[in-house]
Length: 56
Image (cartoon, rainbow, N blue to C red; front, side, top):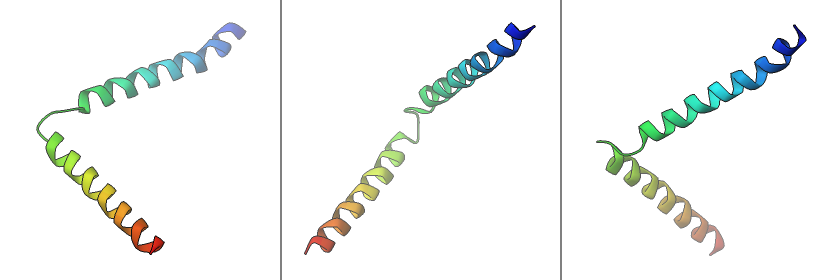
């Protein structure tokens, strides 16, 4: 029965990793893609402008 205890954690991690990948792939694109991209672009622009102001 030790083999069951040894195999359980890797199997659980494999299932969790597969579920994570499926969730990531399903959430790509869709109706909110443009809104999400715009939010990321705005955050990057804010970070870059803040970095430039500190350098000045």
